[in-house]
Length: 349
Image (cartoon, rainbow, N blue to C red; front, side, top):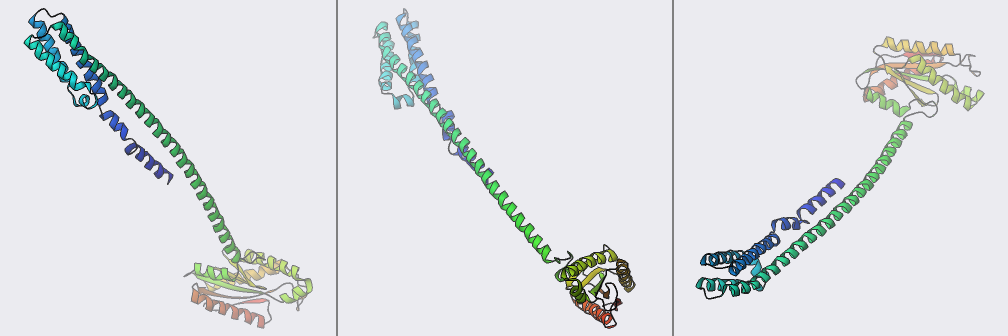
């Protein structure tokens, strides 16, 4: 915007505010008027010299020719328009020329009479020089004034451009911060604050991202977690949840995405081409848990912390996920009904 404003200002100054530039260089009245007056005066003075030294008709003829030349240079519109002495001086020259031709005037008297046109032409010369000087001064002043306008306006436009740029950058940073905060909030809204893994909303979103792929879903439930909390307290229960989240990640590998669905229930979503691969994941998880030996002082069977797992494989999309979740939940329920501490994989959903 500042650049466009500057270009408009330059075009305005060059095209509309500077008409005197063209007027000065195209108007030749002052310069030409002064030159014509100077030359006309020169011819009049030459005629005077010839008349003062005239001793033959030839010299009188030369004086007569100089007067004709002076008359032609003197008889211009600008002189008639601005100088009152022009008409009378031209009439005098014309009259003297006729008298010289008729030899009815003394050459000395004729030369003396020509001082009147010489004076008029001298006045014209001086006035034309003054006019030329005034035109130059006016043009110089106007140029200087418009240069100042152009410089100060350019500086103003530049400062305004910097101001607008600063405002734009400030607004841009605000927008970026707001966007970053929004994404951060959205990310937090998709994470479980206790364990740092995804929540139920994240699970649904990720299933949509894997649309069309063969996926495995494993639901994990901590056996007798209420008794664990009652015996050791909720802070220890929270610590166990974080430990089990790490264990699930280690056992299932980097391809698995973990979620806490609430309370003591976890879920894992991972690429799974076959039911056999899903079975291997469940087995690996049980082996990893047994090796960890998380103590459970209130376990009814005097065991360490145990898990119940239910899994199924499905082709990801919005409709199949609902059926897959139901199938995995039924498998988990069957494990709990059978005494917990085990896993079961149902047929593909």
